[in-house]
Length: 285
Image (tube, rainbow, N blue to C red; front, side, top):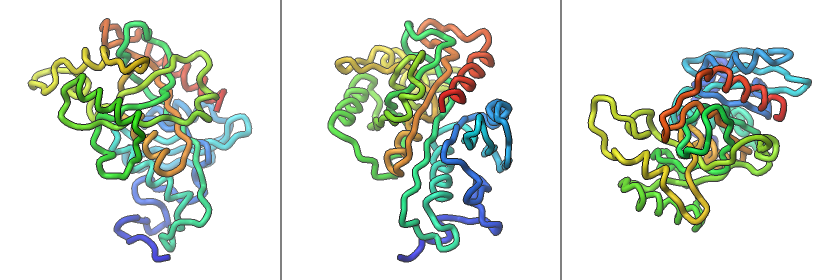
């Protein structure tokens, strides 16, 4: 089997993948993903050992052990486009021969848990709570460039989102891993997360520029499809779930709710809310 082009899968001179700067064997099978590069150290401070550290741009990676388990924590930066880089290169580290650029015969699955921050879309989801995303609806266009399978239920919900909000493009919907969700669900709100391609207009914020969908926030909050409703929004989860489906990796996403967009409340101590979630994930991963 011929390998992929050296311009399709770029490998650095030291044998590391292009953006992450990691070499095979430098990542664990169990991975915690965060957005903020500074949050990597907030996670790894609880590790018993840190065996390797790497930083390239916004991509920071620490690998070590926690209570005898090998773990990696990695930052993606903000947005689905950055998640695409992280997931493609993590997958290449375990499922590609980087010398020949040929896929390995045996698939190597990863287990990835995203720890993120999020805003609530429902008044009953309190600031300071922790939310487990069962599914995600992506308002980004990333999956237009991949062949993501969608079942009839997923297509139906996405069509109803279009009808409800008036957006002029089709979202996509994907589910998380039931296997991983069992580890984290206790004591968490279960929800359906909207992933947005930006922080301001795509989340209904208007500062100085006019926005295309001024009622987007209210319409997402009001959306219902039988018992399905949208609970919160952020900027990465749908990309993780989509690549999990496409690549055969287990994906989960847990969110610290730092704002309630319906009643305008913000967390008074967001650092504590996030730290509590970090420690909860480490205890259960």
